[in-house]
Length: 219
Picture 1 (cartoon, rainbow, N blue to C red):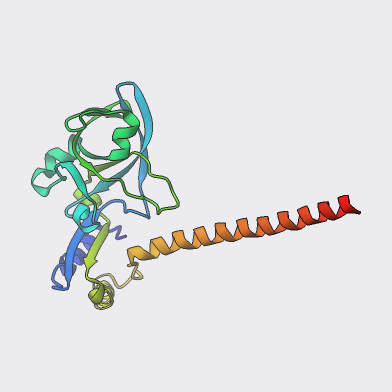
Picture 2 (spheres, rainbow, N blue to C red):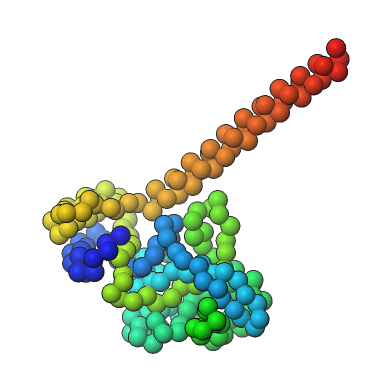
C-alpha cells in the first residue's frame, strides 16, 4: 500500500511502462488484506456486508468474473462513485433478489445505492473463511493506495525485481511492500495445517484417555 497519493501516481505511471506487465489495477482495499463492513438494507432485510472500494482496472486485474450487467468503468467514474455498485451472487441469495440489476439498496440508512453488475463469488480472505454478501463500489481517486499487478508466471520474478527497483528510486524512504497474491493463500494453508495438527493432537489425547478408561474398567 502507498498512503501518499503523489507517490502512488508516480509509481503507477512507472509500472505501466513495463511491457511484461499485463494489467495494473488500483484500489483502496485489497482482496485478502483489507475491506470494510457496512449495514445494507433491501426491502426490510438487513445484513452487514463486506465492501471494497476499487479503481480503474482492478476488477480485471484480480481476475474477478462478471456474470451480468457492467463493470465500474472509468468513463462513468463520476456518476458511479455516487451510487453504482456491483454485488456478488451471495448477496442476491441472502437478500432474496429476483432481478438484481437496477435494484436499490440502502447503506447505513442514509446512502442509496443501485446495482449495475453482478459478479461471481470470491473468497475475500481465503478458502478458510465462508463466502459473505459483498459489494464493490467505485472508490475516490485521491484515496487509491494499492496497485494490483498481473504478469505471466514466467515473468513474475523479473517484474517483481523491476517493481522493487522502481520503488527504491521513487520512494526511497519507505521499504518496498510488494507481495505475491499467492502469499496470502499460503497464510491460509498454514492456518489450515495448524488447525489440522490441533485436531490430530486432540484426537490422539482422546484416544489415550479412552484407552486409560478402558484399562480402568478392565482392572
